[in-house]
Length: 343
Ligand SMILES: Nc1ncnc2c1ncn2[C@@H]1O[C@H](COP(=O)(O)OP(=O)(O)OP(=O)(O)O)[C@@H](O)[C@H]1O
Ligand SMILES: [Mg+2]
Image (tube, rainbow, N blue to C red; front, top):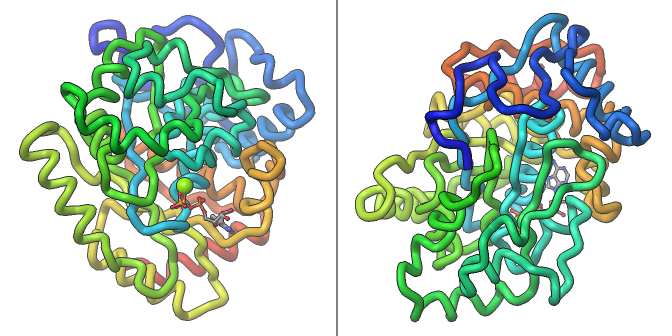
């Protein structure tokens, strides 16, 4: 993991290797990434260029940002958001690691990562103290994106961890010992608040909560927020909810804008201005072992995740975010709909 000492501020690139300094029409790379050699990689790169403004660069964080994607409610878009935001950040030029902390292994599947029972996985890291570097695999087709997969073994880890020393901080230790330079680590949590999620909350500084724009969107969030407070009080003083992402936003329904309004009035500035629309392309992509960024780079789902990633990157360095107007009708629609629900 990168330490403060060998990092620099925004728009500089102290870490060797291919990196995007400038996005949009003015994309510049020291070395063209191998991703450009594949058709889907090329298409995804075109989408990044389409969404960027000429000459505008995306800043890199001055230290590794560890974001815990959590919500104990099932099916709200944790995994979808983890993999698509991670791919978006990587396509924007960052080096990103996805840690799959859900025994379902959905994030590993969506990233096209082999995670059958014999594959070294995050279970070995947590329970067997295997170094993280022994389980991390590069994600095909997306340069700069990596995944620590989950296998079915992880299902037993909640129980096995109970009797181990430092049971809450095993992931934190593994990440601290990981020496590869990274801009972001995104941790995909299971839909529960057990020891796996606690390990994620101890390892990260930022919590990203995806909220589905449906009835009862805020139900149960109090419990998650109390757990965040508990972990901050006892184990990780840096922990805070930095980002709320509205998912599966359907601009045609009044309900979606009502939920968005409620979430925005409850959380305020933590809520990203970019929402993720409900999109068939987003839900189809995992069955091809792909993110929507490579599966359908020009779709509204792809562009919205790229935009959300841009917002996250800008916020991370305190730059004011301004929504972009896109040529794509689908994206324009959801942005217009979003503005109805803003404070
Ligand atoms: N924006 C979207 N548009 C359409 N379908 C979506 C969208 N986001 C997620 N989905 C679909 O909704 C389902 C749940 O999403 P996902 O698996 O990301 O949720 P989760 O919170 O990780 O679930 P779990 O709690 O089981 O881990 C999946 O089938 C996914 O493909
Ligand atoms: Mg999931």
